[in-house]
Length: 409
Image (cartoon, rainbow, N blue to C red; front, side, top):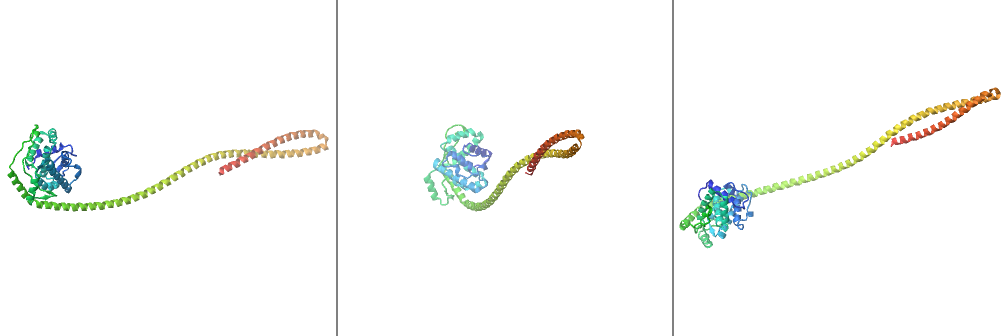
């Protein structure tokens, strides 16, 4: 594969960005190291062979999961080439560089896979759709770079003969077996070149014939190189096993931490439940206190009303007490009048005795009698007033008694 430059990388990015099935636009070549974008692009070419739901996503720096995606990508791409396109390529060499792509984002390995994807797009049944879309979306210099890439890869793709491929595999006992994939004879015949469609005309590419013996010699050299790389494959397998153990230990640690968190969550839930019960009890007490407060407020209103009535009653009692005191003074006056009347009666009796003794005292008697009548009239009036005052005193006493009872309540 020829050395890469910025123009080739730009062509790769623009080409993959033209597919409608990719979930995100790649920005640099390392974005393809997990195989997700390339797998999604191939799903538009053949969804039966490249179902994007069967691969892992959001892999981060986990090279083991990236390795799984890339192996599935190359394996399905090889099946698509053989079953649909009836073509073959050097999938053995690509399989060997997959670990380097997964671990270090090897750009040459990524380009090797990309070349086969581009060749599949321009040789599949829907090639006219993809070629037209590339012409509409890619810049001119990127199209030129892509043309160069396609010419190179199409020259190395051969027709696939299942019988010959199986026979060659039996003859070569040293062929590499990697993840269940048997190596196949990769170069058997020439193929068509992709040229005029990219430059604007719609003519088919011309077939280019290369020397078969030279290709086979190159294949033998590649197989010898593969033999020297078997040890690296074993090392990669050992690294994979170590990574698996590390992931298993990590999973166990996460499981233990999850259990611990679940226990802590259970304890926290119990604490929350207890606190909720305490809160409910406190809320119940608060409601009871609020009801008692409302009852006390009602009782306070009643007491305030009674106090207001009591103050009014006390004012009435004070007024009645003053009247009663006034009535006491009147009673004293009545006693004085009665004493005076008694004195007058004694005088009358004495005068009557005097009248009997002396007729001359008749005139005085008549005067005294007139005075007596007047006094009797005044006495009758005083008695009437006394009875009226007694009635008022009785009524005042009754009101005072009622006021005192209301005060005690």
